[in-house]
Length: 548
Image (cartoon, rainbow, N blue to C red; front, side, top):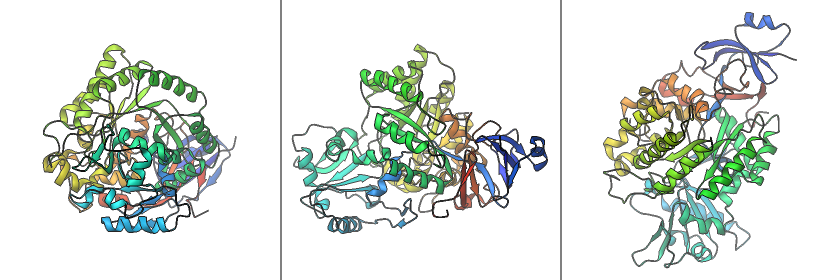
């Protein structure tokens, strides 16, 4: 078999047994040897590829919490507060007030040919607009006839106009938690969490989520991943339907597709759902491939902190907002944890607030007592408000944490002023505490909630700077080396993929991220600015989109 040896200025292997090298040999898509050129000579004839001789190689970066709809959402109108780059490289400026949001929507509406088609937008976040909330009064300025649907950045809320409410059958008599109202009892157009959003989701054909199963949109995600240096990524909400699996299998069968996918089955309700879900996961596991790995289960406990729907312990929200919404009430949450744990699956549990974290840990402890299991690697996703005692408990139970470090930059100021207050905001996404207690840790973007970009995520964990430049919790800053581990081996461990990806090591997939600079050599505040020059998947060098 042909052996190719890649030469680099430096290879950061993320393998503590051999931290650095200059050459890596690849055969059959896997790493054959790592070291210097002399070590490669023992393998006989090989082809030397020196295209990266002036670059730095790392393992392909691993995004342990993302959603594949991050690519396809760009089919709709972006109305986020911060500027964002689409998969084609275009920079979309942020909408800094309500007038800019409405103006962008009006411009799009004027260009729509079908008068009945819904206008769909995403990325909106009212927490940046003071105390005013978007209502039907705002969106009726865009259209009073076609449905206008604006998905929030968190994806835990949306706003719609009166036409959308009417067509979805949401009225003053609708008895669903999360339907916000005017003082007179009429729905005001803000829908909080999945139950309240469901009538609109049904009206629009679940189009936001469907983008995560369209081959074209999956390829758009692949472009985004390449630009970020990512070669392994999750889809942490997927029903693993026949259509979804077919689309995933189609794109991952392409040798040049740049990403390995790790979808998680989403469990939302009921014992029957859990039994059928287990059967579906096992069937998909048998049909996977080198770029398609099944076996995870996603459970959602609560909502979002910036949307005021996360579940918090005393003293609650700093601004006095009422406590959030249980997506799965505690008894159902514990039942789901116990059931899927007993079936042998690895759980990824969304817990933003510390009350949700506590209930999830209770559920895991009860499940382990009933069905002891080594190396389960159940992971709390986001886990943003966990305190010292909860991290100690995670370590004792063998629970992993995947912390939402990007929140510190995008919402840190709002958390300090509105949601958590200056004390608790300083311990949000407590990476240093997790490491101190030996909790296996990853960090993530939750794309499309924030942009896919693990080096930026690592920068957030290292520097903990908000968008205004304030540092939140110096004691929770972590060294660059630990942050790089969290976006490679740390994330791979939480996905039970650390035997396949996450380090440049013999036997693993030859997946590399190509960098312009050594991230360990630049100043920590420059970590996010290290350029991505390309990726390698299974030993196949791939040019960045637009550079082919």
